[in-house]
Length: 82
Image (cartoon, rainbow, N blue to C red; front, side, top):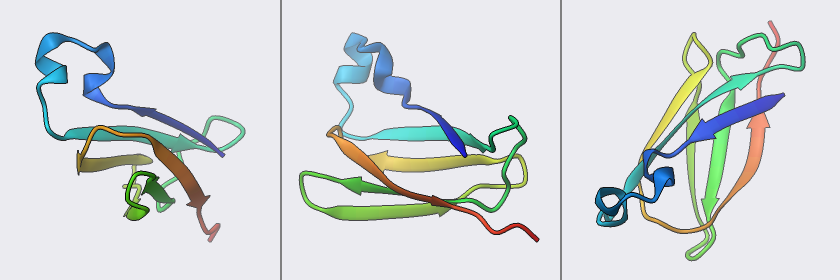
């Protein structure tokens, strides 16, 4: 399974660096490139060991809003084949 994610602040623009939080968006695909709907995406905010989890929509897309700038760890990506 692949995760393609992007935070809008990645450009390191002046406007982005003034934000106190940002949004991480992405898409989950399998090894063939097919979209994975219903995947659980969990990230850990390393500075405080806080976890956030979200499930991808029918397009394999997810949104994690209000993330403070920091280092994050992708701890799990799971999905169930039905």
